[in-house]
Image 1 (tube, rainbow, N blue to C red):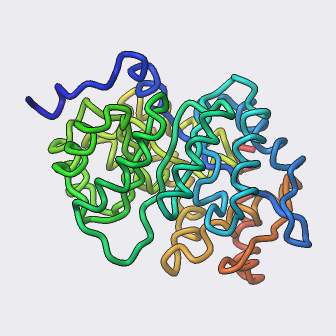
Image 2: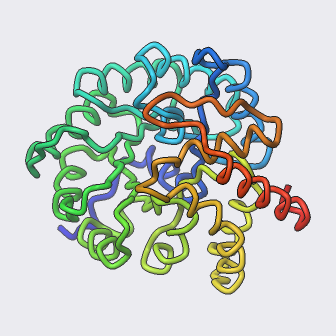
Length: 313
């Protein structure tokens, strides 16, 4: 049996197609006290949907998943579902130990989410067999939900993904966040290029290169700030207009490079600072993230002024 012949159940086919888009990873806004600002959370998600976002991931990395309590993570899923109100697919992020991930997955199912994104396991010692077993336990606990793997480890290969999907047919997508398009091209083809929705998991900067070798969607934190830019990049890539895509890419590049600097230390802080300057949310983050120093905040102000002048905001 070839990798592409391992088709998921029919009911998941439509979901796999819907994931071929710009997948938004919303922030989790905090009050100055550090508590979650749930009213603002709902408003930010509603803004995304109002700009045409088709898939929203509750509890992604841009949402500071690893700083949230289990109760906060559950409420983030519920808040997202209410704010979306059926107008977009809600993908719930789960992870950590297997019991926590399965509990989160079952809660997401009961709350009404249609899919999961399983965070890369954080255990320092990972075998190929253990990686498969971890994801299989989560996927098999909620066979009704589509499951997207978050792959950040270059040691994960196509054969492992293919074996997992053979056991768990509801594994229908891969968010690939290894910064190596050649590796991605090989993994996607070895796993099954047409068997999965392949998402460029390093956001807009990686999207054109990964799209050229098989990706059909990308994840985005920028969409929280300038949804028109993410939409323009998606439209150009779908049209095969790489010249247009790269013009948008150049506009996005300075912001995304701020997020990627110092091994992505300020990934979330940059997004929240931009939202704060636009009057959409506070800049508070939880440790180990930080509020940005003044020079970086000034650079973000310059980018916002540029985007405003160019009509993106």
